[in-house]
Length: 502
Image (cartoon, rainbow, N blue to C red; front, side, top):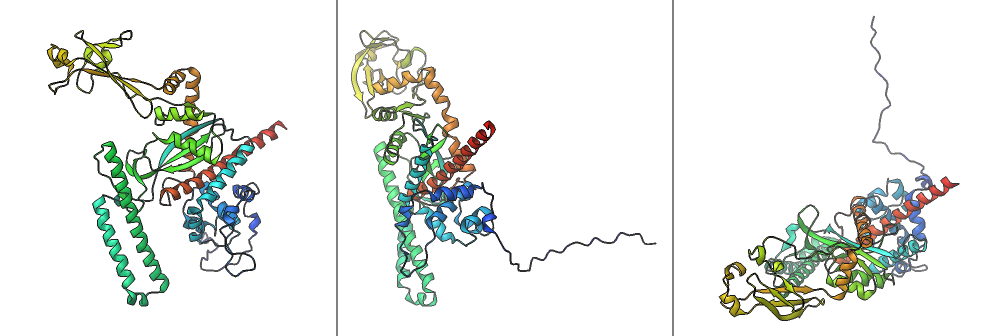
């Protein structure tokens, strides 16, 4: 008797068939979906900057223009989902519920998306300011205390595209020669379509333009290094000349932009964003204050930044603007057992006794170093230089221990002492107080969180656009998305609290 169990009957999967579905677009996403919130909020904004550039108008011929509200909403939602590729956004509009609901299941060209994101800087900045104003009106931005912090984001350029001036000039000559040849090849254009031939000529001209920009950038960097005495070789990228080589968090050096964020400490919302080409943050405080005053029309009562921003120029700039500055001062001098010339013990400058009444220093041999001159730099820092007499040092028995290894015939021991400007001196006194230290301790968790969000949640680890202006626009889109998602989160928490109290 055969007791074998019959083979199970399973439903077949036919992937070669075509199906027609009735889709209720309105019910693709739930009522509290973030895409609905973004669409509603963008609809409340003034988009006149975008409408003024649309030439397709009622009563005239021409193709209908894609609604700016749709493109803005798509990009804000895309960055909230960690998508920064225009092609990926266009692809997701066909199947991802949030994207499909926004566009109503209508296809969107990736070229339309890419062009819209990288253009209209004035309109994007106005959009950002409007959102900041709405957040401020709801009390989420107080304008009382700001933090300033920067992060390096990789440019849309490879390290292999970095070239020296000689190489760029050679490539530029070849590119110009190629443009001339393409303009002369009329017979070849007959074989190609007009559109393809025009695209090839346009690509060749763009390559020449990038090479010329790279050559100008190298010459600018060389001129700057000539003034500072830096003898290192200057290089620029042939694909994104404005991207400078910067050290990233992983210890490598790649072409990048330094994105500066100004964050309000009330709820950690970004109030200003700018992509810069400076690898260090030394000169960013004054520029940040000017951007706040220009775009927001107001300066914060307090500004908090880390040691990379804290210097005499920054302290003076905030003092002139009436902004209370908090930072971590990094002194260039540190006590050590030996100085740069190998001297140690009592022969180090810091070990020389100072007589304030007579304004003189005493060396280990008992000789006096008197005031020689007073220098003052552009930041108001005064340097008092003291020096012993050459005759005394020439006869001193401790000359070999006190002087450098290679001494000139007329050498004499000297000491320099810096005197801080009044603003810097007052700043250092303030930062020694417990209240100032408490304010500064809160800096990292408030200033660095938006950077982490942009990289992890928005996917902004590498720019899709090229050039400082376009990368600033792209960073602004990501910060807009960050602010809106934070706004929705804060609102949900508040509603939950109200429901709990009820």
